[in-house]
Image 1 (spheres, rainbow, N blue to C red):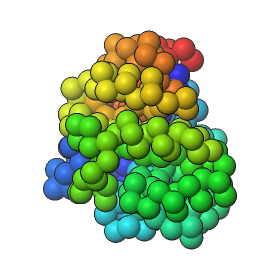
Image 2 (cartoon, one colour):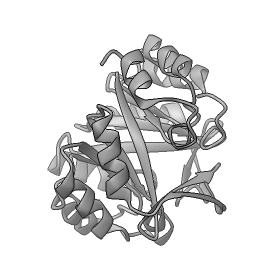
Image 3 (cartoon, rainbow, N blue to C red):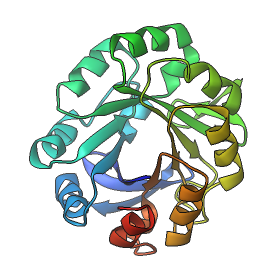
Image 4 (cartoon, one colour):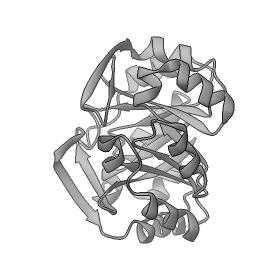
Length: 238
């Protein structure tokens, strides 16, 4: 199981939002590249980056910061936030990142997402953010009508790299992941599922590994010292 330390970007700085609320922002570090290098030094292979400005604006905003991270580390990087057209896909892939997370437009315009998935095979990840069993979009500011499992099963037929599932009610709350719903999602599809939101302790990592998730995104708990990245990597089998 992969462990993906997270960097969320607002104004080029590392932040976390509590339950996806933009007015509940915690700023942890001004230089995201320094933070990424630190994660790499601890043994991480992957980095999970979300452009929160981009998610709100509907287009990538923090390209310079993302490009700097990619240029100055050897990490495999996945990026999400505001990727809603092919120009954004092309510009981000040109920065040297490994894969892109698409959520809002994938849900709103599945035909377009299908076309992009076939044009960029195994470079796209479906970002499924949810409150309960309903998919959330537009930087978690809106909700779609489609259920989490139904949409995941439809998308899993495409040549995508993975599905990232975030339970918004858990994200940034240091309260543990939603194991029950994550297990249901893992069992419903045949592609890797990456769990995000609420991963707080080594026990959480162990629990996720036991239900065969493909990876775990860890954010606020790393910054606040609730979990040590080396211990998380060891628990995941590194």
